[in-house]
Length: 281
Ligand SMILES: Nc1ncnc2c1ncn2[C@@H]1O[C@H](COP(=O)(O)OP(=O)(O)OP(=O)(O)O)[C@@H](O)[C@H]1O
Ligand SMILES: CC(C)(CO)[C@@H](O)C(=O)[O-]
Ligand code: BAL
Image (cartoon, rainbow, N blue to C red):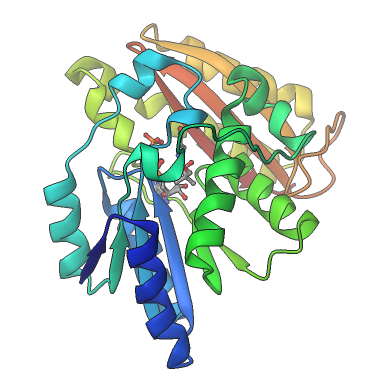
């Protein structure tokens, strides 16, 4: 497995794949890898001939400096996991390699980035699209894999690629969960044991909403079910609950008519967790 820390190194590595006509599949991550990331890597293996993973804790998408400082990191362990998975190349640059002094250019999906979860985390999606554009330009993959757990992020990236005519295919991969239903996330490690138990309420609330949606319901009812389920867990605080049309994220109201995305952000013990589910009436 080739480990690259400079733009020149990863460019040379990918150029060698492309000169052999190999399809390059990219998995973007912020490290501290778990089984969710590994399913993205396996999907990349199925979609391409060569698999490249990037590990970069991108400072510009953290609107909260404390969250950035506490973001978990373990590069040695990450590299061992990726080696075991047969990854071809890993790109782990320093912040100054990606944002040299004087960097000022940003990329933003002006509407999608600032609604829903983006309104709760101002500047977050702008940071994501800016760094993803940089890495797409550096690596020039044929296909890139993103998790559905970060549902709005996936739609933001699809919109950016479409609007900027980037010749890259975007693939979404389903959420991998712990046995009790909690979506795997690098941030879960920051949960104290009681908070870890309480965190099951996120997937429980989505499951309850899904069950009711299947028999036909309204957006208002779904919102109430989510709020009631989360409120029953005193350690959890519902920060955001967005119920929108799948993929377009368009606002909806009244009775459910088509596939609907429910995205929730819940604070448990000072850690912000997110989860998502598509439901159909
Ligand atoms: N449980 C999961 N199942 C599938 N994909 C996932 C899962 N968790 C994260 N991903 C995807 O992995 C990619 C990298 O995400 P990231 O490194 O931010 O991990 P994370 O666990 O989501 O961390 P955090 O949410 O704490 O920032 C993203 O495309 C994300 O959607
Ligand atoms: C796409 C990403 C790697 C950009 O920093 C990040 O937002 C993530 O891990 O989902
Ligand atoms: N996976 C989302 C990255 C973030 O929360 O910043």
